[in-house]
Image (cartoon, rainbow, N blue to C red; front, side, top):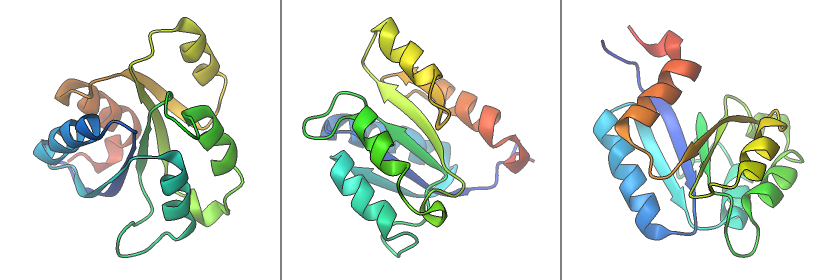
Length: 140
């Protein structure tokens, strides 16, 4: 099965090693043109305010960590909702976290922006599941 490539995935995680690993998993899947790894929610909001740009097209998926210093994932979502609609288009937000707290999973389920909740690390199977669930029309 061949899959048309998506334009951009954004990784928001303060753990650089996680971002590097997840970027490798995504690139090996050959499912996206560009991966934009960011180490803070603040940097992600700034990038999104300027999309589309050469450095950051409008992301199809944002993989968002919950527990980050400064602005956490929940606070990011509050600010993200204030962005202009053109900076939110075609975006699926997936919480990608080490949190095993059932309260986090329940809270995520109550937020319409969050389309999925996955525990780290992102694996090829988890990525395939997300792509199948949200981008099935791109598979041929």
